Length: 374
Image 1: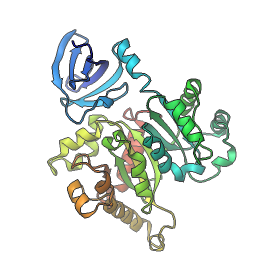
Image 2 (image 1 turned 90 degrees about the vertical axis):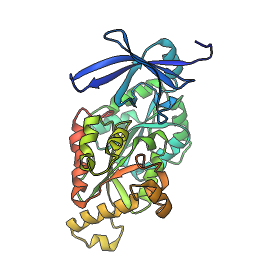
Image 3 (image 1 turned 90 degrees about the horizontal axis):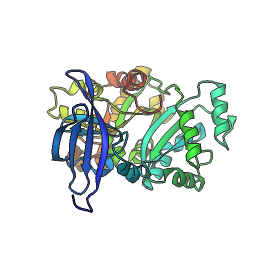
Image 4 (image 1 turned 45 degrees about the vertical axis):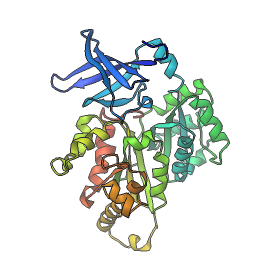
């Protein structure tokens, strides 16, 4: 081994669907050559010889808690394999938390974009409400500057988490120097533990399941730190995010959700691969209240049809090349990379708008597929 060669070691898990067994491996990532090898920890035998990783995987994708797709296997990195890797990566993987009271809900896109812009990656987000008054009082006690009046508005609150080197101190300074009054985040590691404990409380979703459509921001957008920009794109075009939550979809869930495309588009398997290659941000999308007089005059059924159709048009064509050429201001035209990494999934048919929102915010939110805050 050359002196300058860096090797990162991880303990990874893979659920083998045939014997229905969770298997553990030692995975080594060779940074200079972009190769990996794996050893089966149950047999202590080589499972995978040195192999080049696909171009879609980068060194930044390897961290504890990450999901990676390698040789058609969904691997979860659950721990460091050695002290050297731990020392190299722990600081870079430091996580912090942010709390947006209802008064700042309309600024969510700008806040996420601001934090992503300085280099931090969004690792969790959820719009929610307090369980009871004790829960609210706990927040007021934990977060200086927050008072009960901040929670009298109809908008939800949002809890977020970001990952990156020195994220606790850096994001705290960033927020304190910003104009977003009322936003709270920890100033040191001890406070971060308190925030983490408080945010782990199970709280309800803010989804309405009425006159809505579904949008899911794909993993490549999160890796590229463009979630805030996507949010700004849709809220400045007449839509509102009435519910938002991050999910990590297992292959079975992704295949089930995209089943309608099986046998219809040749890229179906690639679409499933992308959806479970990392976390996604699911949203319930509605029209902004009183956005257009003509919309307010529609029946509930007509609003349901129109919001799906209008947002589908704004998302842009599924084929990114077509979107960039003919509809460059759409979400896919702006943020899409190719036919698979096309920025977002959105509901195609009006009758499926509520169904797809329910899939995320009712079915997955109450299952083992959800990752992060419950």
